[in-house]
Length: 525
Image (cartoon, rainbow, N blue to C red):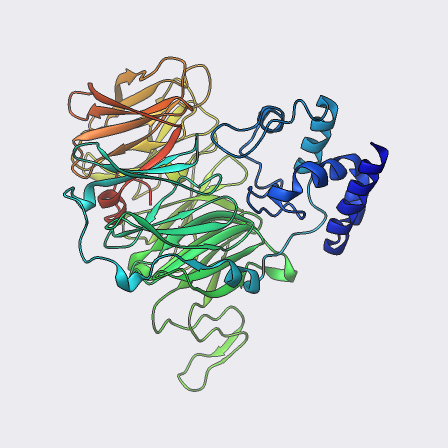
């Protein structure tokens, strides 16, 4: 046993020392040895992933509480992850868990050479059919992310019949993004894999690993580019939307060389730009994808006269980075319908900020305590004015904000903090889940005309009910039961009665093509 342990320890040092992890490994010696023996073959000696997912602290954030320990002990159903309860002690498992969750001594990198090496075109885009290979409405398709067994279901939004089901990478991010015509869907996993899937021929077209821990992707309004935002490393990766060929890597670095994780990437079609939320810098970035973007002047400008510009650090070329400096970090964004204003949740958890993207500065504060989930906010008309409605992650309430004067006009008390809110222009109702606390199985239905809760649904008592999404016409509302033995519960959006239930493996999100590509006021952008 000692010889095996010594050999494994030496292997762990050989793996980690070149990466600058030798001190880190020495502090967790037994755990690194056990990892080298039992885990490295699948997850990579550097923990960056292989046949299995990456095992970095940022990659494991979703496995809260005892979840990681349970996976190591009991394995994971419907995957190749085995149970180790009979091979190593509970104490050793706890040691491995602690090591995997410990912050790394330095930020691991994933350079362009490795991005290029991971690029795999599975189907020649030139060989794809011109029209859908089925009879369903291609704009009323749902992409359903089933986290329970890491699959995607492509669902017909008229008949609610599955058209296809295929496996995905581990820990796929819920937010599917579509090409402007609705033909292609782009998917990002926490492990940095971006996939391109054709909704006409129902097949995977290309895949590439853009980083080690990816937050999400966005598709340009003209359909030419895909931008991925990474937590590890601290960068953005621009891809060609036709086949995911990488175009460039953009380090996310602020003043004095401080780098930042990316919280989210959005597309702003009217502005022909990507908008970037940053985790560690009090800035918002805007990157133009126009053919001839206006120059960006990040420093002092003495003369703007054409042909005689005198300025520091001018970015006069494709994909210039415009840095909008703010007073506080903004993690979570919401946009008005024409993308003139960005509303962000401040890190202090007490308020929000309104940023005018045209002038590039904050123009108002919003009273938004309780950590609003603005990324799930919606807009709708109330008494002749446009309002923003958002749930809160820490408080049991919905805030209704007037988008002309940015004042709170109503606070709706709920049974607990919520996560997702949805509506549709063809329904008088907005739906919001509770998600947290003893009433996590509840979904409130709010009348947009009166701002009152008119009904509280409990699709499956005791199980989390979340993430409502409407079909393209607003006739049906789909609710997820977030459980490995979960389901999509389909409601008549007019009378609020359940009409069908489709068993699924923890369907964490579902995204209607039409609603997403038209930037419906009732869905997230």
